[in-house]
Length: 453
Image (cartoon, rainbow, N blue to C red; front, side):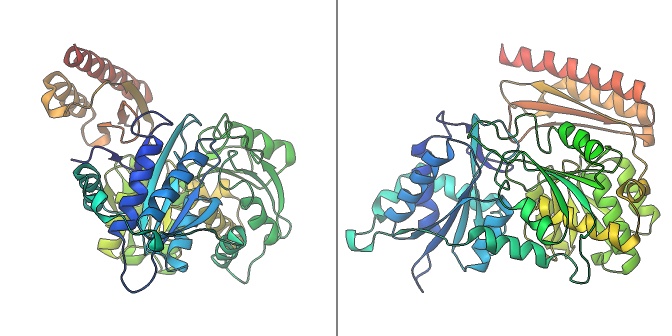
């Protein structure tokens, strides 16, 4: 079992174990050692979001990388998918992102990409943890003449902007389209508005004044309210709300209504099914995606595969099965024909392309999916005891499932990034599922309190 790594790298409160400079230093050493390549000088790309604590982690990672004889290439603030892209395009051995994604500024995290731009599998993360715990790295320090260098990559934003623009159909422009873009005061604050502007759009920019503490603060994908208001105020055709590291997106239609990841996947998958470009006519989603999405895709003649929560597991399934579209309800959307991980700006460009191709607003395109009512309740937990050991909880889940029958779903799971359990219930009747979710949450809270006691 991994202890440091969760569903999306290492994450925690900055300057509190495990998110300390000591961990970052050792992790830099481990990455440089494990991804060694005897053919040429090793290179590790390091990017970050706009949190104040990123400076100290960036410095610690660079020191660890150089101490093992590898060069550290710094990107500065850059979206997570941008780091993944640069890692593969610049032929680096690995890429490291310093970000806690959608979490508040007090938190931070570290996630790692392999040379091909894909996130590390669980087994590789476990190997890193074992290496850190063994103390073996002390035996592999390089002599002074082999210590690596730190270099800032020139023109980072321009490289990534050019890549994003090439994912948009070359025969289309955004001339005459007004877009509200909220960058969450995060990693995309400099470049996301430029992408849309250079394709011809009139852009209203929000969340582009990071100060180290305002990332995700009442803005971005987790808080799309200001985008909704701005779309109405400015008469925009579309709103784009990114999260702190810009690997997820929430779209807002011309009426100021939220279009989440499930609805985006539905409208894109419909077009791809009609064009014959959805690989094996299959969409990959997580267990959290709405039952309405699954029924929509099957009604269109496609299939849906579900994975555990986490875009890394979506990508793993896509690669195993040869699929090219997948994602999460939260807005992590993966277009494997273009990128190796979720990319919020890229996904927004695909939605805009669908709008232009069909000559229809997003509000109309999103109607392809009929959403089932879904209730999600979070329960604070001190420790993640296996649910099967909590007999009261398993009985309550079974009772809820029996009451819903084939017309609904119940999912209880622990968060991979926070000390919380998540209770999700969906079905045709919102009052019924609300009552079931609240009851399950109460049972779970009592069971966890007994275990903690």
